[in-house]
Length: 385
Image 1 (cartoon, rainbow, N blue to C red):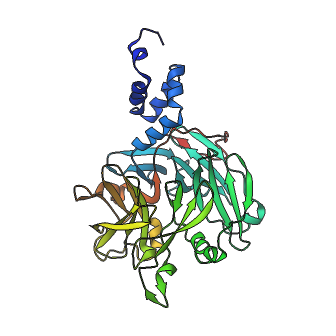
Image 2 (image 1 turned 180 degrees about the vertical axis):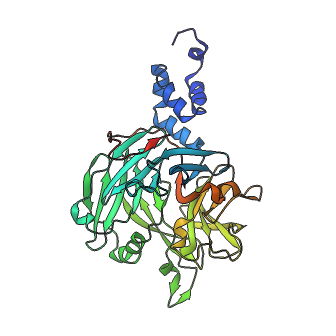
Image 3 (image 1 turned 135 degrees about the vertical axis):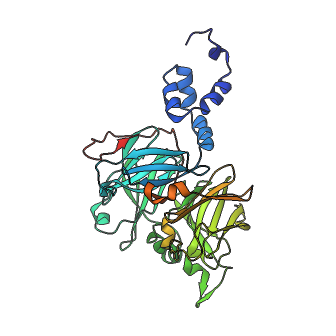
């Protein structure tokens, strides 16, 4: 750039503030303007600041042209972003394009047993995880945890062989490695192994992954209690499990976790007519506080309402910085504003003619670059949008 242009006279912090407000594609292109702009847009501080500004979305499959969309929490009817389009004309997603998880703006797909692929829809980068060993691939392979490992800058997948008790950590930067959990064996037996079979998606906050409480922690001799409700977390830095208290609930299997305003929150779907919203206001002290009770997004007596823990796997919940919470599934979807005490039903998305199928995955766009490997389109065909 010319030395006497107005932009050259601006302070670097001001330029960074301007670039933060651009769409993702424009930010990527701005890095080609000059070395100064490229330095600004590639720093971890810039990526972190931009990530905080990104609206949260829930992922949904649009079957009219077999695509994956991101529905904004604040306005899912209007801010519907097309991320990718699957090839072919069938009304179902190809088996080798199965979406398993979402973390830090990166999507995890399962291509085959023990074989996983990563994709960032904003940067259009692919990465291929090393295939898991044959001894793991012979078994059912539940996705246990997909997370970003801050010290190494890698995305990692934690898996476990249920019958062998062998743990694997798969990362973009190394071959799969076996690791043995160093926790109390009783903790692993009572909580971790049942958790492996639920396929419930964890919520990342403060460097930990959090899973909602499981039923057996809230029942003693058949009598339901609330005092001993427990949940599990996984430290993504030390890569060890920790146990923590959960919200007081008589139906812990009907609890869904989410993040809102830097706090861990929980939505309890145990009642038919309403949903209780809890917040972990003191993370260190593990203090949960009941804040809100909102009406159920499903009509009273509706068959679409989840009735058990497996039904919760299809429920989506996410929030934004404006106090909005989106809750629902294919049979009912609503946006609540906890600050204004308002609620609106998302009718346009739920119309049958639109054929949108809501997933449980939460997505926030990211410009983070990760190591990628070029994949032939015939090997994993997806159409970038």
